[in-house]
Image (cartoon, rainbow, N blue to C red):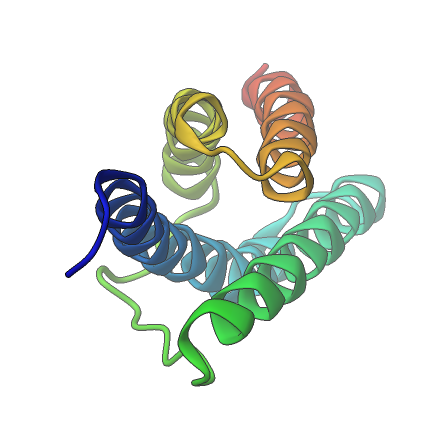
Length: 141
């Protein structure tokens, strides 16, 4: 029989696996769509910045995948839940909104996680996502 502490820990780990799955799917979507968005960029400077943002998303994916694999013993199998925008401005607007929503989500997850490494991982990713949102907003003007 599991103690109350063990039950709580098991429930928290199950929730973290769900949150990591959501995060991995989001990062996978960003990685895929930002490559396409960069190809639509009107200038080389914007293209370069979008590809730098994409590199951050790859790094986030790798960190989240490591934690996911440690918890589950399985490699993640991310899914692309929606299509990428085919027009530059629509893609930038969608990216801005997604980055803003992701900041809130990562901060929520960070607040629920007990492990300090994972907590800090989500906090750092949230800070990166906020920075990305500012860049995408600047691309709209």
